[in-house]
Image 1 (cartoon, rainbow, N blue to C red):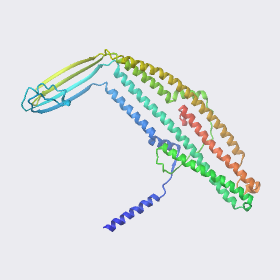
Image 2: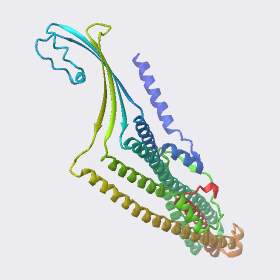
Image 3: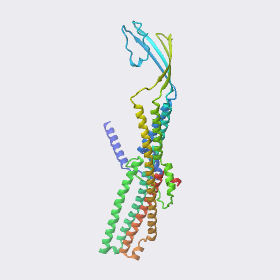
Image 4: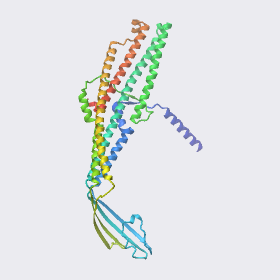
Length: 432
């Protein structure tokens, strides 16, 4: 039996090592895939979604104040006492005088049905309901703000990784070309060999830096997507050369209309006004109507019955000026909210203008790099060496690789600046 157990454990260890050593399949992710995973896994988005759920439940709680409150209380007591009996707090609502009339062992039963209904609360219930609805709108707007920020960060990382993947591919091809150049007879010349070594070091240094940056950007993207940091993946997609001539005034108008941050200031002003109304309402009376029906006795069916109807009016007379202080606080908060709104409008206008200028700059840089790329036609082996000479061909390859790197980097920067422009205006890229 021990041998069988030992063999079983050895088999498990071997199988586990084999599974760990087995290469994990690499994921291929597109931009919609990245946004999908972020929507499901990003902790900031999930937390904001939970805030929306909490606000929905608070709204549900506020709506419950519109309906009457109905309570049913039942109690059974068995006692033996010769003195006054102290009831536990849970039974404090029972009229217990009839229990003490009998000093012998006995038992009593009690059932009470109570109904509570606020009749007049100076608008408190309605204000609470409106406040809960506004808080829900605030939570939804905050979710949109967070989602907008996370999605832009994902798009920025996505375009940077696409460009880095292309740059790695180009420099790896350049490293292979250098190996092919070493096979030519001209490479045996010491001066030529020295220049070739220098160029190979340049390419290897660039490859090391780009690969490190690529892995670093992949880790940042995985954190945004909420995936395991050891997930192996590559991105699919193309960096587009297409540019668009946007109208700055239209962008500003769309930003003022669509930015959730401005909606947040409107919600904040609504909340301040509602809280001001609540402070004013504290100066007025409240009226509550209640009723109860009691069944009590020592035997079933309970022989003794009683009922009561109550009208409760509460009128505030003096609280040391606290109500007026709260009113002044809310009025100050309303004025403060108006100042914040003006400051936010100026900030949004500055963001849109800066994003617009950055996009126009990247359009011009892309156009410049594209013309350079078109002017410098790629010459491959062996034609390049035979036509230009070995050293001139190395200088040509340096220039060609630099232009290619600049071209793909400008494509990524153009895509990022366009995404940022859409982010500050809060537009959907698919519709533009």
